[in-house]
Length: 148
Picture 1 (cartoon, rainbow, N blue to C red):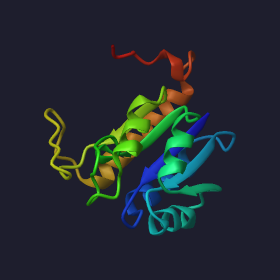
Picture 2: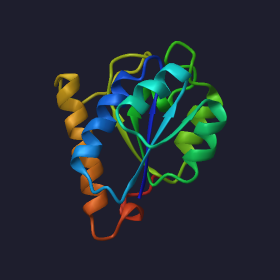
Picture 3: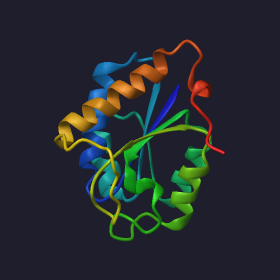
């Protein structure tokens, strides 16, 4: 499976996600780091991502080939991350057939009801568990419920 980790600003959340994914899933799966900016990409590269890309076109192109997309909830909100995430990026991620594992952060003007107030490290651990569960499922990424 292709797991695309998307992050912006300094890439700190993406870096932690990649470190935990590398420790928690089989090496046969491709972990791709796609930074909204060069600093985010470099942060994720330091975590050991082998396939990296930066910018709007990288997000748009790779969203089409990812099986799972992981990042903060802001990656599906146009102009989030202080305007770094363009409407085209948010649209590409939202419309991707990939399963999205979104980390709920009360930023970007977004509030998610029903989400526990766990610490960011606990939320990231849960996101990594969800990715591993998707990978381990017998029917694969296509088994997730489709929203229509």
